[in-house]
Length: 107
Image 1 (cartoon, rainbow, N blue to C red):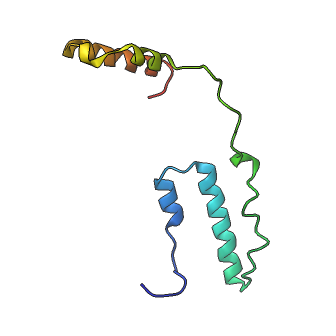
Image 2: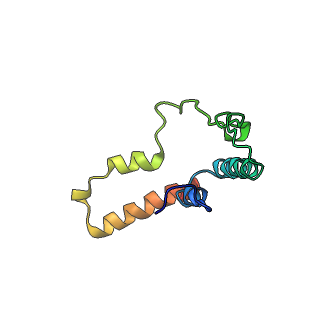
């Protein structure tokens, strides 16, 4: 490893592989392009880039989830005592839980 800037950055690719939301990846690519353009123009003033002004597409909905709302699969899971299930009953319970999730497209 040598000191100094790298000629290639893989941070955005790593972020994409880590599962960051697509709007975050798009914004990072736009910022990277701005940095690269400024570097090519020998304009290294990054203070004018709106790094922390997220566009509307990236705003996170911080409204609280409805309290006391429990998914039916969780309710059913809470009622199961695994120590009392036979292997067949455990398999049936698993299929029932999966069906609850499939009904709501959560799988």
